[in-house]
Amino acid sequence: MTTLFEPAYAKLNLTLDVLGKREDGYHDLKSVMQTISLRDDVEIDIGTGKPWKLICDKEGIPCDERNHAWMAAKVYFDTIDKDPDGLEIRITKRIPAEAGLGGGSADAAAVLRALNRHYGYPLSIPALAELGASVGSDVPFCVMGGTAVAEGRGDRLRKLPEMPDCIFVICKPDFSVSTAQLYAKLDETVIAKHPDHNAMESAILAGDLAGVAQNLYNVFDPVVTADHLELNYIKSIFNSYGSLNQQMTGSGSAVFCMVTEFEFAAVICNMLRENYPQVFIAKPVYF
Ligand code: C5P
Image (cartoon, rainbow, N blue to C red; front, side, top):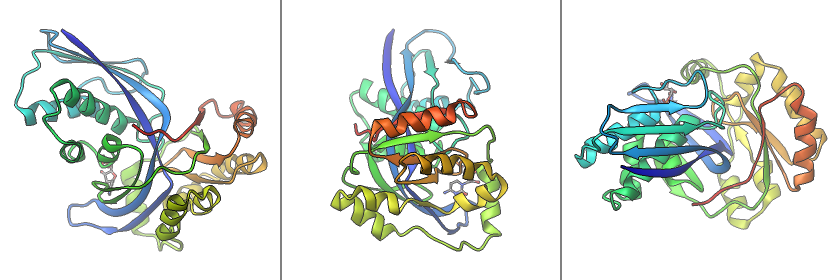
């Protein structure tokens, strides 16, 4: 039996635009995405000689074939046409669920990366990302990691240079948002403002942190904030203690801000932690 270890990093959407509904029911989007140091840990035993098993240290996460990590392993072995002779996946969860941080997708991508490394890289990274798309829309980005523009369903990726260094503070409020319902709601909404992707890409290329911060924008943010005004409270705390800018990530409900110094991040955490236990400090990550 062999045991594999792989970190499963969360993602933030620095920008997120929804361009229209597709014939397959999904939406075309455009997003600048960033891997961050907030992470789950994934361990995989290959060759247990027993039926497949998934263990997660957090309640409320499905521990069977509904889990994206399990789905990723299944699709990987089907593709390379191998039988692992028993598999056990253990996930240590730190990324909050239903937050817009890509937790389930990160776990799935970690499984794909770890298995592909173990079997001597039979699939290229683009092929692995394509496989990930059958598991979930954010999995291709989580396979690739770093800073990238995602288009289409989230499956067309273009790598960008590393973003200028900074610190993120992320706060996950108690409520959750259904991604499918939010996309449906957006279909009935006139999108008043869109992110400026040219400006965001230029700022990243120039290493201009203030420019990156200025161009954070997610079209889901006003839709979710309209129903959950406490997001404005969290953002006002960010804003009062050194945030360059703040925004919701993905389909929420987590919001994040960017700061230049750890001291600002620590103060923001202290100010929020009493009401919001799920506050995290993270950095951009590259692998
Ligand atoms: O692919 P994933 O499971 O992450 O998507 C969750 C839901 O979000 C989908 O069922 C779909 O309703 C919506 N979605 C979408 N267009 C995308 C990504 C997700 O409509 N590009």
